[in-house]
Image 1 (tube, rainbow, N blue to C red):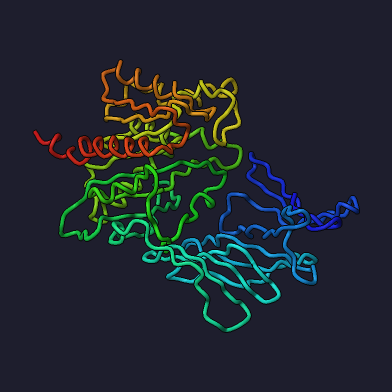
Image 2 (image 1 turned 180 degrees about the vertical axis):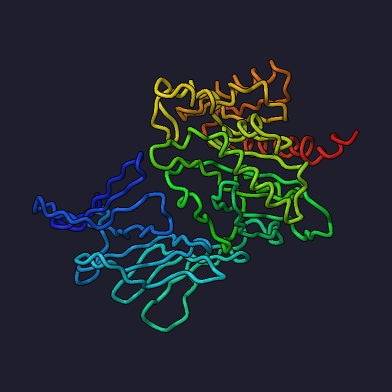
Length: 432
């Protein structure tokens, strides 16, 4: 619930199983006066009306930001579209529910609303960036025809990445579902230099609609600089990086997405591999796969059920679903409701099939209930016991995400060494 005043509040409700979300305009002072504002799919990014802006209210508590006449509120959203995200600012008529577009980000910049400072004067605080320009804050006036005022001049935090090229890709899975990803290539790279070793980094998501799963995620105009143990550091090591290739797991109607998890996961990975190989930039025999948490789970499954990748890097994952028996991610069924699904989705079940080298990294103090350190310890033992190639790195005192400088440096060092040995050098190893 978001309050505006004693006779006006906004209430949101959602139902995970059906992926529906509803928004109501209510008058707490008049029970029974609720009006439905939106009833939509929470998966549909293209139709997302945005988030209502809030402002400090009485005693500093956040309240709904209203116009001076209290008849309208304001919405800011990502503006997802087939061309990528284009953030916007809308005005919402509380009486009719109709919206009016006040502003929208335009290429070649990515600009988003931070706050509507003064609706009466049209003053908006925005955060603007582009592929070459780092994010900075601007004062934008929607009513006066004056140039935006730049408020900050934050420099490029990692100029070494200035020459990295970036591209938003779209392609199609075998079953017709449209997919997307962001491609990064090393500074100065041209196709005349030959095909690159590649590293994919992904995270699967469940959907109830193939149409929603096909929507483009991301923007071609974001300023990208890595931080922490980011996989993007591999670009400076001479790798092509495919960041966030969408891995939708779709279950329409009465079907549950995870009933065909493995098949759809492999199909999505195959489509991503085919895309970069067909572009003439990737060597199909030198592609690695990695991910964190559910992405680590994905990594182990892809190595167990396909031969698309030469090696994997799995960080802080869960690999035995019997250890998360009361559901995980968007899976609401318990282990006892669907034991075959839990077994099929667990790469631990297929540890004997993981023959490609896999690097397992885990924080020894992981506080995520689904990814206790024992998950990596047991998968490591299972792969080793079946003759596979694996390495287990436990980071002292780290939780689900890694924060210490030593841990971040260690993670990057292990990742680079692993991929250099088993991905960059894979073509040589495969030569008789």
